[in-house]
Length: 327
Image (cartoon, rainbow, N blue to C red; front, side):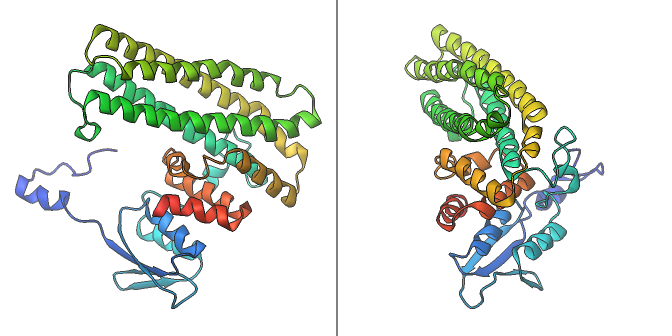
């Protein structure tokens, strides 16, 4: 990220006001149950601002106020304004983003393919996070305190178990979605096409369950004991294996299988049906685990994912996902 403070020598008194400068305040007026209002509230979660949301039914469209600027209109108009005023991190999907997946994924790619790719990104991010967390616990060995918000070693292991359980559920639903929806479409065009991918799903399930059991054992051990440390080392080893397996598996899918979805020539209505079927399989991911899932995406990826969901989902489901994020 570089040196944000520059190279000039400054006293502590000069630097302190810059470090504690509060983020700018954005006021948002709009109907609280409006999709447009919730969409903008979601976008503002990723911007370095403080949001003051004022529920209002005076206008159908949400209105945003920043300093002397008053912006009202479509969601796209307001998101464009936010990216102009607060460019980092960007919310808009650029052409570079749309064509960056192995050089083939672009505007003509079926929506379900984008959904799968973005799910890969979130899972990869969470696996990396869980691995780093486990490595940190191993380095501390149950005797050195970590982040105070984690509490005691036992409290931290419980938090870790909860987070891994959430990730495992997302991964299981993702695999089931591919097997029941995506692979079925490809197999109907070319039988045996997804055999290797299905085998890799089956291969990784025992590793995932082994990690869960290892975490359970750590949770009943004495922190700092030799057995406790040995279990943490095994946990790190298992996570590394799962992370590498998933990385290779996702890359193979994105290189060899997902490009073939364009050859199925799904029309818009069929794409919408396939996407809805995919979300039906991944119910927990798109309900109480939605916030957890979205944490694994970059801001522009998160907004793209939500845009795809909103385009094809029923209103009740979209409202539930939005409330999980912004309330």
